[in-house]
Image (tube, rainbow, N blue to C red; front, side, top):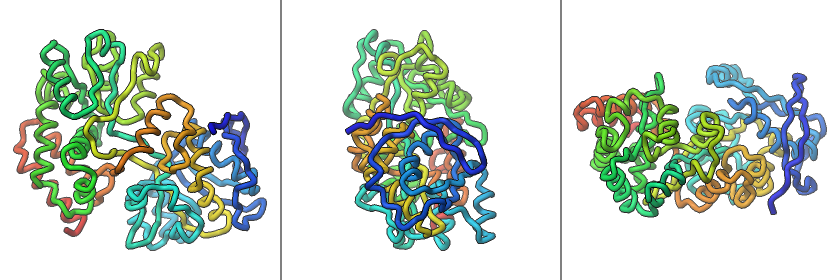
Length: 423
């Protein structure tokens, strides 16, 4: 049963008072794992503002039940964690990227030894967090990327219907072109990270054409990046991203348009494009840019049809300490109750099965259903393979759109992939 939200405030040990809403769920089922009132937990994450408020709303039932004292620190500087781990003084709990699991595998505590519940997660959420046979990390906050944003009002006015298969999407794209509408907005520009939106699009095409197992083999290095399957995905992406009939401004428009501006083009008046394939954060950006637009009427999304599974990003929980307080937090967050409270607080999506059915925000309800029913979840290839792979991939995409030879570009990425994965 969906739980109502209760306004309250939490005062951190450093004296800052933050107001937030917390889900009210029975606390008598919370296992404190022997932790005593006043026991401290140090945490490091990159969340701030509203995100931090919602995270603490999720933990409030645990804090109240066990009397724990949270000592959080928010930073996006990876060097902070590196320095503390090397000094032997890491935070008790860290929320970071999946790549840090490999980096700190010798210092991390296996989660199943400190109360984490594997039954709360599908196997494909457990696999990336399992290093050398040890379960070292679990995704707690996720966003899905395999979705397409559009305007229902514009679709209705132009006689377009939401596609449910890849063939229907392809036919819709061609119908839009025939009608004189530009189907896609595909801006790549993002400073030093220019190219990441292309990487996301290509990976989703791979989920359509090849499936999640193929993507996982690319990440492990079992399939080289210059494989024929990758080339086919690039060629389809290039068909749309290079041609002004299919995307705003053609190749140069794709290269020069900032990724946020690409979102706005679909919802401007009049719209410059009919669709954008972009992550779940898009709805929030549309709301900020066009506050008068209404979700579900003026902007909405549909799952990329034909994709086998989803691509997404996650923040991963990892533990450097096995104290009773840490065990209590890990046990709670990975429990069905923790998943339900995560969903009720509206802190993006939780891969925890307990979250399903407890989202309140309409967009999260819809995205939560997609996550709960997916048959696979693959992390971003560029975020997962280390050793400069992500930058090499982005460079290949930019060079390809600028007219570079595709075989040459893919071979260059495959070389970096092989060096990074040892395959």
